Picture 1 (cartoon, rainbow, N blue to C red):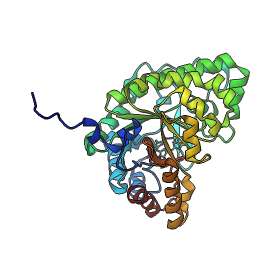
Picture 2 (picture 1 turned 90 degrees about the horizontal axis):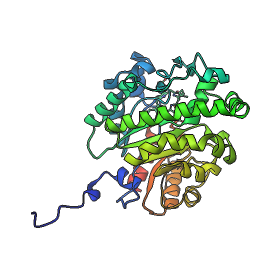
Picture 3 (picture 1 turned 180 degrees about the vertical axis):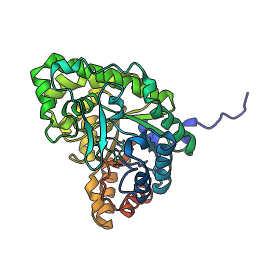
Picture 4 (picture 1 turned 90 degrees about the vertical axis):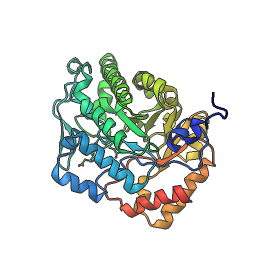
Length: 349
Ligand code: CP3
């Protein structure tokens, strides 16, 4: 029997994991959504040689891209390099990232009859490249940097299936939702089961945290979220939340925050359309929060970046459970030195 008890494992756990669990930290952890991307010259150099989907399907390269980014930026967590949409391929959707156009799905789901051809994700091995990326990213990083897995939330993925790409108003999506409620729930249930399996597979491969992106659900009212979305988001996250800290992120409508909390997630992602202190009060102090600098602030001058970063830290008021992040992904035209300025401000004041 040891005479002295070993040091509490928790105090040596990575800052980011401790913040997810609402434990005290010496300083606020920081990482950024879309931290690896076109704003980085090193990323553009890789992309000059390989297409985006090919990059996602080459785990060695995907891991390298994220590891190099984490080392360059000095952030406290590494989200795997992948995308929201590859999960849709084994479900029968014909996905392409056309140069300069963003994602295109050539066989969108437009009618109730189309829903029947959206397949269950029975064979998770078809996404084996993502699990290989989790393993390669974990293997290449210092243990102090947790690896985050991710998936789209059912609404955002169903939206892409229905629209066939990104949309401003998501009107095909709303039209199916309002006109054909049972087909809508059938589609959402299929997507939710797939997301659940996919998150568990990433966790089994070594993801220490997962984030669920409901990037476009802010186009709905709270009543519609409750009726058409919440049960499916809950299903998608139910297994993950039992295993690892799960970050539930949405943008566009701060009135949804209490419902995001209800659907699940130990950490709630906050976009910039609400002040962080007000958001946290709304979410409840028994959950951690992640956010919430407007990514457009990174296009401003250094003094503005520093002042706005400090303002968010002040609103968190030293409470345990704040993870610094942007309110949405980094914009492609962001100067790298501004990103470094932001990170230095979070780390050193
Ligand atoms: O650095 C990281 O955060 C990791 C990788 C990551 C990407 N996409 C890489 C990517 C993550 C976490 C995502 C998530 C993602 N993908 C979301 C949710 C986040 C959000 O912004 O709300 C969404 C909506 C998508 C779907 C998607 N992927 C779109 C709409 C586009 C085209 C628009 C764009 O930003 O280019 C993509 C492409 C994409 N995903 C790129 C990257 C680095 C750019 C592709 C390229 O290199 O040309």
